[in-house]
Amino acid sequence: MPAPSQPTASHAPSASDAGARQSPVTVMIVDDHEVVRRGIAEVVERTDGMTVVAEAGSVADGVRRAGLVRPQVLLVDLQLPDGTGIDLLTAVREQLPTARAIVLTSFDDDDALAAALEAGAAAYLLKSVRGAEITDVIRAVAAGRTLLDERTVARRRAGHEDPTEGLTPSELRVLDLIGEGLSNREIAERLGVAEKTVKNHITSLLAKMGLQRRTQVAAWVASRKHAGWRSEPGH
Image 1: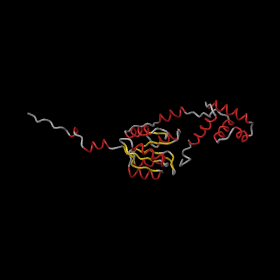
Image 2: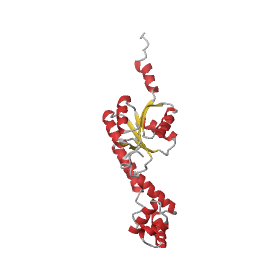
Image 3: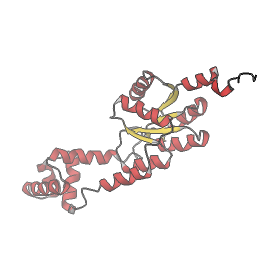
Image 4: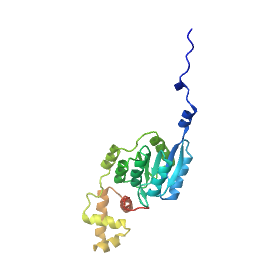
């Protein structure tokens, strides 16, 4: 009578295998604003299955610490005191080619999005997102998913045509001065025209840009100034 077959090793997971499955995702956060950094860290630490292994506030410190702790996922601010998050990702990728990266920034800018993709980021999040969304993306990226690709960049660019394209030179000048916080009377004095002319320019540019109020114009100009993320380190 043949002896009963014995279970193979593959049917009996070892303790080390079980431990590996239970190991938390290791996360490193790089942001020069300590309040932001600590807030994100607290959200991550409260989430099951992930832990923060390091924090940094600059490109140089981030590259050094990443080499020491070897995180699985990096959460990187786009704008840092000594460079950009793109600089950091490029340097870290040479040391840790398997590390996954998420760009977390306050800049909703297509050029930044394209740069993040080129540097190998797997996802791009605005700081305005809720904590649960951040941890959901960390989990997805750690599992190997890529939430940022060339189609995303192309689709965004296709839907983000320049709303000032049809403005006249005079309307563009008025647009800039509104962004500087000038009143209609001050704009008129600056340009040497009647205040009624300024109001006519504003009425026209609002219609062309698809806006309804002067305050929306000021907000739009402010958002474009912030979009220059490469030239304003530390903000």
